[in-house]
Length: 270
Ligand code: HPA
Image (cartoon, rainbow, N blue to C red; front, side, top):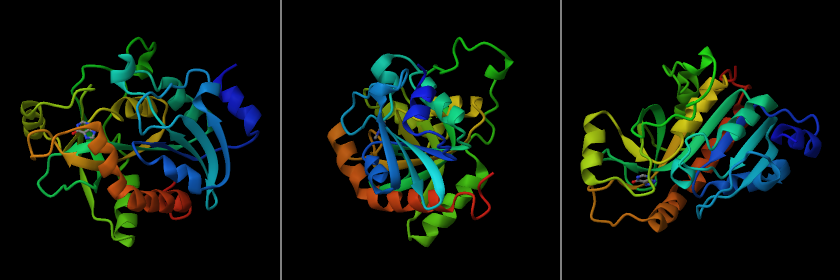
């Protein structure tokens, strides 16, 4: 049975319009929404088996205000499986359910001087430093995905406006994808900065590529959990990532809730 069929059985007729992939420490959002139906990834063929602490492993189908939404609490990373397509079934299932938009969240290291831990950045573009693609082996001409405006300018603008309403200073910038699991070297961070990166991280980009291939509109948010390698005296660790992600959780949950509730009502839905 496919993941899509399992979801159809557990929540017949439910058609989410927006999906969110919740990065480190943001899984709590899924607990605040109405009419939630939760399906563990292990019941969904092809969904990842999250093995990173701080990441859950459940699909939550719910309502944010009037908007039917699908939340993915937990993701697989390239560094867990060596495969860039670990989220392929999950992203295609979201498209198959009828989602129009995918909002991706992650934790990242910041390069800009004014990005303190706990700040939030909306993604304007990305750099793929892994040499990997989730579309390796994909047949057909639609594998040649256009990534211009991959991060939808209208959705981005909307997030900026909503952040202003809740007094969240929202940075905008380019996210550079590194394979991990080791953190970057200071030299890699310097190189990424010269090439235009404002933040570095180990996720999100393959999901963006899969989502654009599937015809979804995309928006992305990074929680800056630390200054990138070589830019501060603090030692980098996953412990620090989890702790500092919590600094922004409340504001990001408010922002996501406002975005989901307003989706389609205020002119930024399709
Ligand atoms: N680098 C890569 N991934 C990250 C970082 C970082 O500095 N912080 C949180 N996730």
